[in-house]
Image (cartoon, rainbow, N blue to C red; front, side):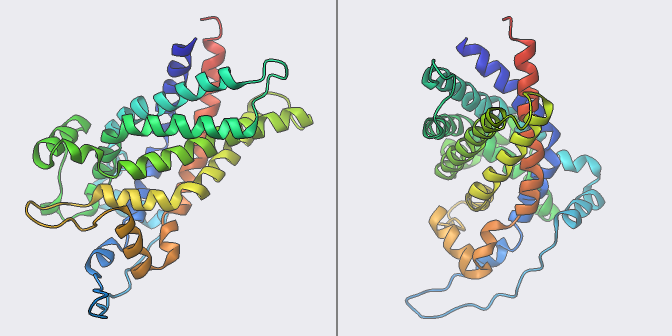
Length: 308
């Protein structure tokens, strides 16, 4: 029974990840807008000096998407999709399976329900473990998605997720595969807790109140609401995670960011507090459909595998 939860969650996650990959790519490109200004704007506090940086041009998700298609063709919208498949296989399969196990163990046998705080706790634990397992694929995915925004001579040109991971390990050390892992783990804990707990709680409320019956309408409503909650909670961490993972470390040179805190401070200092919500529109545009596809597919897979 424990293995079944991993299989069901893995299938649903891969389907959802691949179907919404173009939106995720646009989100990553938008989160990196203005990053060069953040990296250049090192304001030495001890000197009391600031370096003026011109305001970066910001464009919306439609413009970003059109630029990708114009520059590299429609297929470029699926850059890094192999990394998405690996990430969902490692990260989402782990978190969905572990959450399912804890949900079965912590559900009240008399009422058949699980208290909200237990759902949140299960999501935090499952998300953290899943993120630690899937971080190498996450780093590879971010880099492959961001590669197209660089000048041709600066692109990494990874051929696949396997090539990306092997090149990172060879050129930057095995530790580079877990770059930004603290952010990944924190984000995954929040997104899993908010996403899975919200879905279960909203679905239970809808059914208990008799608003709708247990069917497609209930699944879509609960999953979209869960996607919105997850987007609001995790977008700031997602922006910082994307920038830390994507930074290019030259041999013998100091990295662009000293860490997640340094990245967050520079981003806010040079681009404003709302820079932490860069890419929010494509985030919710992706998180909504992703969560809907994830849970609708999960419910259908559960029906197909109910006798196994």
